[in-house]
Image (cartoon, rainbow over all chains, first blue to last red; front, side):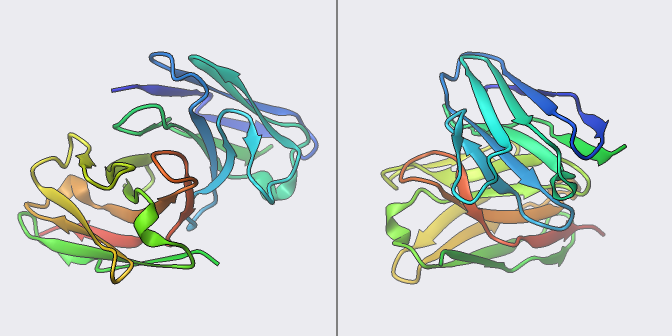
Length: 107
Length: 120
């Protein structure tokens, strides 16, 4: 199974900050890496698929990069509605696996 | 609009059984390799089970293999998860999720989830 490791597990940031979350796969997954946002009491929502493709309707302040084993989700200017938990997920092979999550909190 | 609506969750004793359903609408259900994903209280996401992109094969996480069975009725646009021999650690919100594209991929959208509590 491919293990997905996210870091940090949590972070505190202020509105307007640039935020970077990393995700590392235990083996190469090419660009089969996806990012989700989850708010309390809600289902996850896709932000980025294929490492860097922005899902329709997602603000352009979100971006993704990387390939192989190392990936990054960047929020260029954190907004109040971005405080949430973020998960990466590999869709390279079954079983599909998720990172442990990164909780973005208000500083 | 694509919609996924789960049902069937509830409180069950350890060793018991439960069947979850996910009613889908707004897309050609038979074309998609649907999955179940769960989230234990205050924990992360865990893929549980899904279909292959051809629909001919089913896959399971090791944690549920031999106890859970995924199935689908394309005539009713409904996905199922039969859960047997339930354990306390199966307590979670269970989401059904549609692949973003045909085949195994990211999930978009997810249903609202149904809560399963396994407790004596």
